[in-house]
Length: 421
Ligand code: AMP
Ligand code: GLY
Image 1: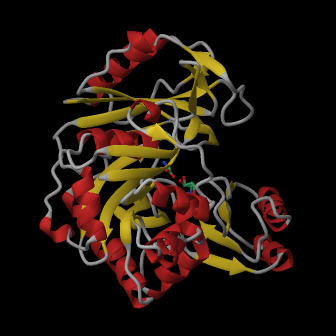
Image 2: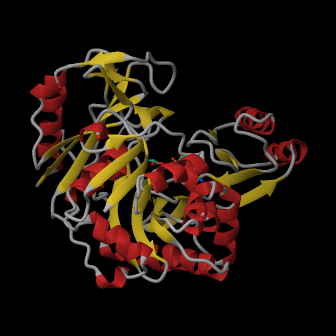
């Protein structure tokens, strides 16, 4: 089989790595990929939101199967577009992708199907929003409705912050805003929970805890994710039953009731409050860096899993896992998530110990003249799988020391809640 993977981050390098281990695969293309994927696949420089160019490339190269990494093309309907042209694609269609594309769509679905989530209100203009804020309890959570790469969420401690959030959203900071979402602030601990679905059956695809804040102790600005560990320390069978019965099953029923099916990964961002799960958000893809953290412990051919989803035969497959803990630390460019330099050389890759326990997945990197440059904020993902999280952390830190990249930084406390000091 010839496979194309769409995307260029750490998640897509991890997917490329897992797919490259499948004996069903003869060639992989990454559109556009990064320096890491270029070791395993052919990188193709195309805009993944230009569906026509993507299709023409697939057709010209007889590519049979497409795996979509990031949310934008999914929300914009790439699956519907390619399926109509007889290309097999792993990922949810446009209707189902609204679970990530529109927070208000998801909130309404939660209300209709009684899915536990933060209390909420929706307003259509700034004046109504200001009036609401005047009497609202704080902290208050304010969200832009559209895709905003994780940036359209404000946790407002006091009224002035809330007024500013409303102004920024209606001024169009995240694109034209037809409405705005207000949410009750939930106090608890977050957990990422994943399933994979073929529209008829679904299976667990792991859990993780992501560290989204830039600073140690989970302080400072939100980022794309500074590191993660899997499984989440909160995970247990009793909690999983609640997540499935109260959140996942009613959601999939809601999508079925719209006359369609959910196919692909579904990522539930949960807040666990006193052992009860609340849905914070859905993503219609794997998490990043959760994907890099989880795939090294997958012990089943991932292409077999993806094919079975597309063919609606997931019930025929058993997904096996290696019984280990996995930790991932993200190495970022100095300055991230604010301004950072681009095109900085990274050396010493040959010094790293990479094997069946220790992995390196690239994110914002590019290869030029056989040298590797950092071109993004999140640059490299170091993963280690082990019997204990502390052992995994030790292995990662040894590799980070060997790389010794002075232009970057990483959080030294990833997994602090599961690692004794
Ligand atoms: P979202 O993009 O909706 O996942 O929000 C980004 C982050 O904001 C989440 O990962 C949470 O840390 C935080 N957050 C979002 N909604 C709430 C809420 N209702 N209560 C507390 N924290 C929240
Ligand atoms: N790890 C957060 C995300 O992928 O959205």
